[in-house]
Amino acid sequence: MLESNHVTKKYRRKAANDDLTFSIEPGHIYGLLGPNGSGKSTWMKIASGLIVPDRGEVTLDGVRAGRQTKAHTVYMATEDYFFNYMKIRDVRRYYEDFFDDFETPMFLKQLEEMEFDEDTKVASLSSGMMAKLKIAVTMSRRARVYLLDEPFNGIDLLARDTVVKTILERMSDDSAIIISSHLIEELEKIVDTCIFLKDGRLILMGEIEEIRQQQGCSLIELYKKLYA
Image (tube, rainbow, N blue to C red; front, side, top):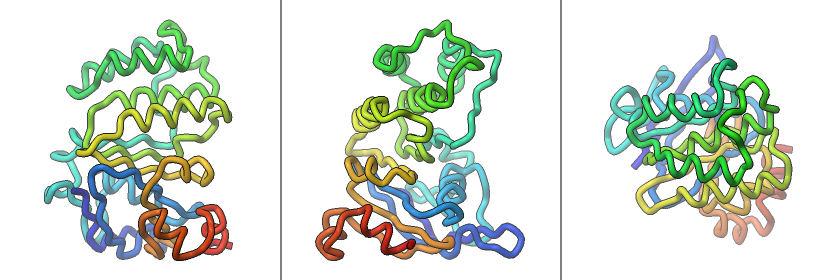
């Protein structure tokens, strides 16, 4: 489905991604793990077609990530990307106009569960509310690949359950979800496969149950071992 083939991206002399090669298969939720500076966001931006690698490529069904794959790939960045003058209603209309796969009933259902009002201005949202709105619009698209960069940032403990529920509801046999997060305890509940990056390189990848058995520890304990 999604293939990362020897992907290398440098900023000046530092490699953000260094020869990253791995495969993403449909029907799975992946945890993309590593400390700050390990290359997670850079790889996601390459996979979504936003930036071009210096060497190698990411392909979706054999097509290089770029203009042709953007219709099938959703990337949720860590940065806020709505205009402050917008109301939530305007955000919905924007997505309805620009994305053929945007499902309005799904979005409205999420707004109700998150207790949002469409008349609310984006500028008035707290960081946690903004994070939930980003999740709502992202997961309301019917895509092949979902790339979620730190989706739990700024979201309180109780609201995380709603976000997790939203992510799981969108999962299907022909799509893949890739989540980057420092909140390992949240990821451990929902991911089935983990990808560990360090200094831009792949250091470990596998199904979470197999990794637990081989390493004899939880995902959090393994994370500490790898990065301490």
